[in-house]
Amino acid sequence: MMLCQICKANPATIHIQEIVNGETNTLHICPECAKKRNLAEGNAANSHFHEMLERLTQVIASSADLKLAELFDAKKPQEEEEQDLQCDVCGASWHAYKKNGKVGCAACYEQFSQLLLEDIELNQHGSVHCGKTPPETVEQWHDPAVSERINLRRELERLRKSLDESIRREEFELAAEIRDKIAAIETELKSAELIPDESAPETPPKKTRARGRRKSS
Amino acid sequence: MIFHPRIRHLASKGPVFIGQGPILSTFLSLSRNIEGFQFPATASANILESVAELTLAAMHHEDVHSLLPSMFQIKHELLTTSDRDLLVERELMERSHTDIAACRVFVCAEDGSTSVLLNGDDHIWLHMTAPGSAFRETWDRMSELESALARHLRFAFHPRYGYLTGAPALVGTGLRITFLIHLPALGLSGRRKRILERLEDAGLTSAPYFPVDGKPAGNLFLISNRTTLGEREEDLGLRMTEVVTAISREEERTRAELISRQKLLFLNACGRAYGLLRNTYLIPTAEALDALSIMKLGADSGVFRQFTRQDWAELLLECQPAHLCCRMNMALSPMERGRCRAERFRERLHGPEAAPEETGPES
Ligand SMILES: [Zn+2]
Ligand SMILES: [Zn+2]
Image (cartoon, rainbow over all chains, first blue to last red; front, side, top):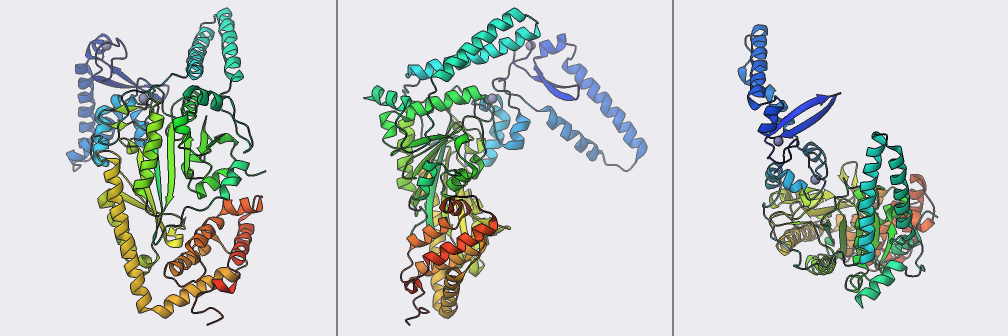
């Protein structure tokens, strides 16, 4: 389920497309926030209806024998476009998936659940997995060197974001501080490269391999 | 140097396309992602580097390492275009994986039976090849390797959808099973197209192995599963084995009929294919593959006394562009490739002992 982008508490049931500077943004919000924003469902529906009436009268005036069905058909693509969703976790969009067949992260499967399920049921043998399953216990993260580096990288991502933020706010002293921290982490990450490049068959075993062996024996 | 020494070494290994009869080989690939990390398509280089380190650390644990005999690892960006082409020709990498992208790492067992690509379409792509129709044995090997990795890595898994993959077309088992099959007789009889089209009804799909101008050069086809959700790995594999075996039997029946009815025409075709390859000085890929296809038909039917399936499989690999460049250790233009290819055929088919029995000089 997707949460409202304004209050981040209620389920988002209203999806509004806004065109800002030629870019289409989709806003997912709950009815309450919509009311506050003066975008209540009733209003939106009303304006839709107005638009339709207007177009209908135009069409009838210009060509008498145009079928009504065509008018409703013409409405369809617009409705489909309004259905675009975005994954809260990775930012991948439903439209992008429709284009290249790829989602961005594990959470996408939940975020696009209804639409994706329809797609999967259409293309797959069934809709429930019945093959191999993972073991109950997994000793992930038990390699301290690897998990430390992962934490450092996460910290790096966070720092880079706050650097952008501080520059935007023109807090240059803070920015300089953050920049130093980033440089320090980058050096630390580089100094202990864990993926050795084997340029020739004679290359002796490197760090990772040696550590792996010691751990498991 | 246009080839990495590791990759050059792989090119000297025996071929995998030596199955008895029409089914030449079985390829299995298995996709997995690590929980808590975005898929490669959207993840930052930082995240992907963590994924690569985490996976490589897991692979160096003894229980995983022992399943990848003398494995080696190379950063994808250090592989030349020729390296990557060679890996594709040897079925160790997919064509779609040859693009350079952030933090891709290629891992390979030294015997060339197993390869792994990190940060391709998914975090981990395990790939295995085996000669002939060999789903069960290959899946046992694959499953053992996956289970070993799963002891050290938590894979993204959903109770309903199964293993989560970048492409929902792979969700569930993440398993792609492919058979390489040689169907010259069914092609001649005009029934091949219809038979392959009917695979769609079984949730399977077929594609020419060497599409040249929309035609399947060499009469080689890949048959793969289209679906990955709602069926156990073993059930899918055994179902596919049955289907592929049935097609193979039909091919063999058609061959027998063709040979008994038109023996002279059949021998003529074998002799001409041999003559072409034996005497050519310049030959393009498609023509070589079509001639090799007839040579294989002859070898399977016992027409050639000293030309074995092994010889055939080696030639099939050796006549492809990257393998030719590797042999000459230099980049080659299409024209130069045509010349080197012809040279290779003349070398390999030189002696009179390789001539078709009935048309050989002694008879
Ligand atoms: Zn709200
Ligand atoms: Zn996502």
